[in-house]
Length: 417
Image (cartoon, rainbow, N blue to C red; front, top):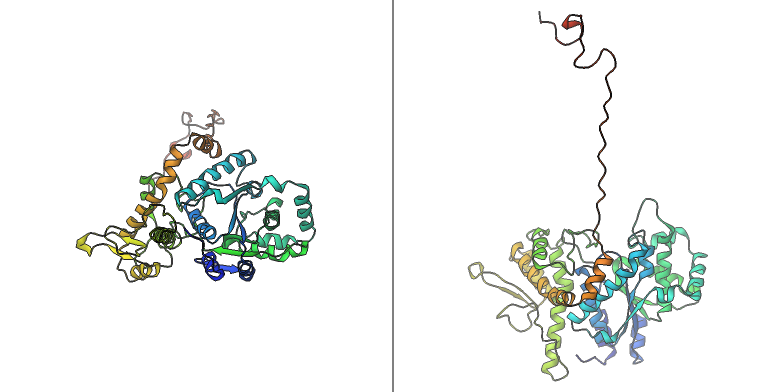
């Protein structure tokens, strides 16, 4: 697919579908000079990645098309520091697992991994210069500011470890040591981004721009989380598990504000569909090749359709949509039954994950790494307490003989008057 040359077109492509942009003028100035901006997106390899990762990874496709040089940071040191999410002995294996998953996702989206630079955080975060800058930050950042910056990213516990307070400073330093012009992440990282904008200049480094995408709600309406299996779909979940989870998802008729399925369609399925339509148009214009994969449009859909809700003819037949706004409006008007939306989204997700799961099945190393990175939990069985016989004290017990009348030792009640 061809790269636009007009600076404004490139900027629009870089920033489309984002929730917020901080420092956009910095990116514009680089584009006006005819240069290529550099960015990084990082992920700490803690819990198993879920399909919510499609949101940033799909956006990275836009960056590459706009000529942005993208670095993928596998933040192994961050993972270890984040309040016991990833024990040190597992971080190495989980880092490798994440790389396998990310590469498979990029390839499934026809994003050439040759244009991406994968960097492991420990490769530079343990150097003398990086650590000295970290100490300098520790000498100027208050505990309050560090805790506030990481409040939405670092796991919050009643007695936080010192390691969690280091997290925001390290993420700020990553921008300098990776040599980027902007950092990309979820809007939940906004406080860390503004922290970086404040403190990097105090170290004598330039302020970077920050681009943020919206967070995808989980299947039950809250944030999609790796630690909550009921809120997310794993990249390796089989089709029957995916459809079972979708079936249980919260999807109230007409409710478009608390609807994880609609949100996923908006932030993942439809952008991917648009990306494939654009590639097809490029192929027809003789400017490149498409990935040969269809959009999420059903049979007989008109040109430009980005999503189809299949329905039996007795219920009006399939509904085809060219924009997310139209899809949302139809659901709000109760023209789409929750069951039909669940089936459409479930089928789309199964199809989306098929090439990733195929790559997993064909890669023995990936399978071995998975077992090492996420070993099955061994439930601790508490030993049963042995019953110890304690003889009753003298004059007690069921076989005690006594010469007293029954009512005197309480074995019967006196008759009522």
